[in-house]
Amino acid sequence: MESEEFDRWKTTMLQSFSGLSDRQKCTALESLIDICGPAQLTYLSELQTLIQRDFLKLLPLEISYHVIKWLDIDSLKTCCLVSKKWSDVVNGCAKVWLAACHNLGFNKKHDAADKNAHYWKTMCRSLTEKMKALTNGSSFKWNLLEGHTGIITAIYYANGILVSGSYDLTVRIWNVNSNECKKVIQTHSCADIKFVGNQLVTASYNCTVGLWDMETGSNVRMYVGHTSAVFCVDLDVTAQIIVSGSGDCTIKVWSLNSDQCLKTFVCEDWVKNVIVERCQTNSLYHRQGEMAILGAEWTTNVIKIWSLSSDYAPVSLKSKTGRDITMNKPYLKIDGNIVICAWDKCVNFWNFETLQMLNSCELPCLLGYGSMFGLGAFYRGFTILCRFNNQTISNHINELHLGVPKILTIGDDKWLYGWDHKPESGLVFAAVINVNHSILLVKW
Image (tube, rainbow, N blue to C red):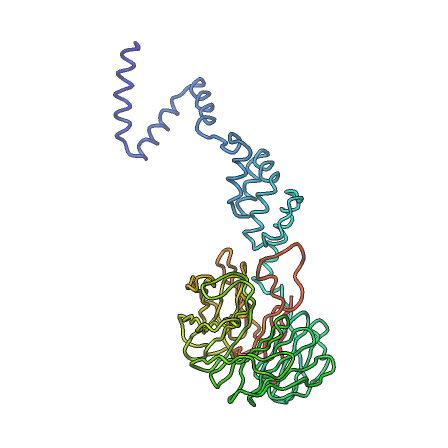
């Protein structure tokens, strides 16, 4: 066939081919292959290199690293099986496996520039197993503390020590590692309890606040001034103050060194939680380093914020949901420049600098909230929110008949901000089980 005649035939054939359906095109190609000879078949085998390109092999190494660092763990493992080149690229970059560790909840503050790809790949395997253990519950163990003879009304944990107050008019000091009661202090009724060092503060239903020496068990002083039950307390030893919230709709600031009431702040409703924090950043109403006092009102769903060093009217933050129907008191915390408060199943976040609401999320009975994880409790168990992938993990403790949790305390909360190079240990949280006047400890 002459060249011009071939060109006309090819043009006509291509026009006809383009008008076919996908299935017809495939059938036509199969028919052509059937009548091809060795020369044509050899040519077809060489076309594979034109159709299939190894983009990872063609890209500069730094760009390859940038592409694959966005892959999840399973995809990285699959890439290692493609070819030796792909395996060398994936296994040779520390940044790739470090990014994978971040996607599994590793705290970026613990990044180490001197660690190689093999170290971070090994860490990645370890974190993968850790997440599996979180999911199936094998990360945790639990046991009971028994000793109180009346309903337990308050618990608080810090640095390996748990304290509990009860209607039996005692405070018990427990060593969480050994599960032993170290000391029993004769006190008043206890609605809330906190301690720093050896100074322990109790809020009482008899309208008083008590300060106690944890070593000797003696009462240092009583603070009298509230006209209704005191529901909550907090203290700051550097500022030498105690703050208390009451059913008389006031928050009082007391001197840690005397029985003097330094200030009284008036609220619109019962104060069910109060905290005192040193401001870590400036805000519209507070300067960095000043002491801020936050009080959560019970039925108005309002958080009020005062500055201890000024006479400004309080700032009010309105939450989105109604009051908590299960927990004994709402969760309240300042974390850097974020104010966190949990009512019912809703967790609310405000920017402390602007005092504007940022967002909210659902997590029942919030116990703790960090940059990587959140921890909440529910009927017969607890929930972990993995913030880095929005996965929720629930663990049940059916055999212990936990029931609806009301009085709980967070344990060692460092893990809420991400994993580090060491295995977890210590207390996750504690919950009161008043069926038998005991305390459930959930540990790593």
